[in-house]
Amino acid sequence: MFFVKKLRQAAIAFAGIFSTSFGKTLERKFGHIIDETATPYDAKIDKFYNDSIRDAETNYGSYDHRHFDFSHTPIKMWEKVKETFPNDSRIEELNNYFSSLIKDMQTPMGIPLFNINNKETFDQFASYMNKHFAIKKSWLLDVQSVNLSEVFGATIGVVALLFGWKKSEKEEFADLASSLVVAGVFGANPILLVISLVSLAKSYTKDKNKNKFKKGTIRGVLGMGSFIMTASLFSSPIIGIIIGLIVAISVKKSLKKIDLSEIYEWFKDNIKKYGSIISESTGIEYLTKKIKNLV
Image (cartoon, rainbow, N blue to C red; front, side, top):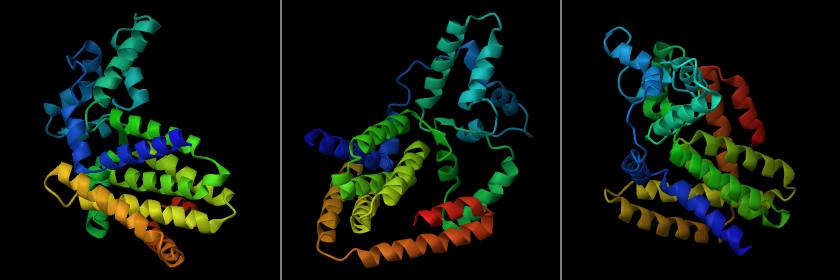
C-alpha cells in the first residue's frame, strides 16, 4: 500500500511538473544529452526538409517541419533508414533506426505520431481553434507528437494506474486518472492523455459506487488544474511550483468538506456543451459522441 501511494504521488508529480513552463525548460536543458552528430541515416531522414530550405515554395521551416515532411514518424523513419544503405544487415538497420529515433525524441518537439497531409488545411483549422477556443497552433502540433520525457511520464502513469486498480481504492484511482488527464491536456502528452482517459472511462463503467468516482474525479481535476494554473502565474518556476503545490493541497483538503455532486454535474454539462460546439464546427461527430457517452 505504501509503495502504491508513493508511485501514485510520483506519477502525479512528474506529470504535473512537465505540464508547466518549467517542464518545457527542463526538456530544453536535457534535449542534447545524446550526441547529435548527423549520420548518413539522419541525412536521409532530413532530406526533404534540407531540400525544402532551398525551395521557397516548399519550405516549411522551423521545428514543425517534422509534421509535414513525411520522414519523421516512427514508421517513416524506419523506411528511410532501410533506404539509406540497402546492403545493411537487419541489426545495422535497427541500431541506426533507434539511434536516429532517440536523437529526435530527446528534443522538446519530439517526433510526430503521424503526418499532416495538407498543411494549408491544418493552418486554417489551427487558426479557427485559436480564434474560437484560444487553442494555440503549437499545442495542436505538440499533442500529435511525443518526446522522451512524455514517454517516461506516460510509463510512470501506466504503472501507477495498473497498481492502483483495486475495488477498495476507486476514489483514489479516479483522483489519479483525472489528474493525469488534466496533466495530459496541459502538457499536450498524447500517450498519457489517451491512457488516462481510457482508464477513467473504464473506472466509471466498472464502479457501481458513482459517488466515489465523482469525488475522486473532481478532486483530481481541481487539484491538478489549480497546481498548473497557479504555477504558471509566477515568473520564477521554482516559486510557482511550490505555491502551486500549496494551493493544490489546500484545494483537495477543502473539497473534502463540501458536496461535490453539483460541481460534477456542472463539469458534465459543460463537457457536453462544448463537445457539441466542436462537433458542429469541425465535423468530429463520432469522437464527440464517444466523449459524451462517457459522461
